[in-house]
Image (cartoon, rainbow, N blue to C red; front, side, top):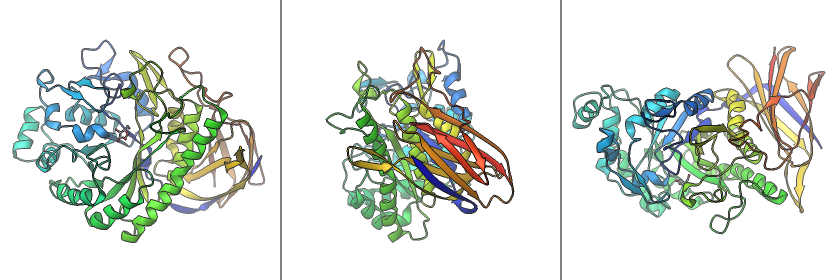
Length: 497
Ligand code: AHR
C-alpha cells in the first residue's frame, strides 16, 4: 500500500503547544495512592512520599502540565480536608470511585511538590458541583497570595512560606454529568459567578478554564460560549475512545478481535471531527482564537481487567493504545491554532496510562513509549504537510491507513511522526522533503511495532514492547522512502540545511 507525503519545511503553521502533552491524575483507584503516593514510611523508595521509580520515568517524558484532583472526584473534593498534619486529616468515602476510604494524605502541598519535582505546571480543577464560591476563592488565596491574609497564614503554618505559582485553574468538571447534572444555561451562569472570585494575587495570573462539552454536545458548547465567553481563557472537551458501548460493554483491553482493532482506530480519528466542529462554534464568539480548547480528558476506555474493582478503571495497555496515542497527538498538532492543551486520562494505573504499577513493580506501557518518542514535537513549529494514499478497509468501512505530522524544533531539526494503523499491511511511504534550505546531513528513526494485535508489557516481561532503531528506509533525490510495519508508530529525525 503506497502513500505520498509532502513536507514543506519552510512553511510553518505555528507552534505546537507543549501542553498538548499534558497528563491527568485523579483520586481514582490506584492512580494517586500506590501509583504516585506511597508515603514517607513506605519500603518503596520515595522522595517525600512520592515513589522514585514513577517520578524518574515521568521526568524523562518532560511532562508539561498535570491536572488534579479530578475528574468527577474534583466536584466532591474539599481542599481543606487535605492540608495540615496528615494524621489529623479527615477521612472520606470516595463514593464515585469504588467506595473506598480516602485518607486525604495526598493534598494540595503534596500535589504542588509533585509538580515541582516533575518541573511541570499544575492544573487544578475546582469544585463547583458540591463546593461553594467561598471555598473555591479561598483555595486560590491559600495557594497564591503572598501577604498577610487568613489563608496565606494558614499555608505558612502548614510549612509553605511562599505561595506557589499557579496558572491553570478549571472551574468545575463535567458539570453536565457527575459535576452536578446541570443544564448549560445554569452552568454558564454559575461559571460567571464562581470565576469572579477566582482572583489574581500579585504577579500570579490565572488562566481560567470553563467546563466544556462531552463528545458531540454542540448545544453545550454553543450555550456556554454565548453566555460566558468574555470570562474565560479556555474551555474543555472530553472524548474517550471506547470500542464498544459505554454502558453495555466497552470491550476488553487485550484479547480483542481485528474488527475491534479497526473500530478503535476509527473512533480515535473521530477526535478530528469533534475538534473541527466545536472549534467552528467557538469561532462565532471568538474569531481571533483568544480562547483555547483544552481536551483535558482523552484516551481509551475499556472494560476493567477481570477480577479488579470496577470502580478503579484499571486496564492493560497494548500496541493498539500506542496507535491511538500517536493518531490523537497528530490530530492535536493539526489543530494547534485552537487546541492549547490536552491531558491523557490517566497518568498511572487508570484508563490509558503511561505507567502501571503492582506493589513495588512498575512498567512502562506502549503509550509511554509514544509520548517519549513524540516529546520532540513539544513547542516545535508545525510544518505544512500533505498526504495521499490508500485506505485501510474492513467489512466495507474505510479509514486512512497512515497518519503523519511534522515539526521543526528550535535547533532546526525536523521530526516526522507516522502511524500505520493497518493491522496486517505494511505502508510504503514516499516523503518529499521540500524547503530544507540545504542537503540532508543526518537521519535517524525509531519505531514501535508489534506482531500481535494486543502485544503489551507485563510485570514479568516489562520490556516485551519497546521502540527500536528503524532502518527500513532510503533517501533518493530528496525523497525519503520508508516501509512502515503494520501496527507501527515511527518518528524520524532529519537534520538538514
Ligand atoms: O477519567 C475518568 C472519569 O471520566 C473522570 O473522573 C470524569 O471526568 C470522566 O467521566
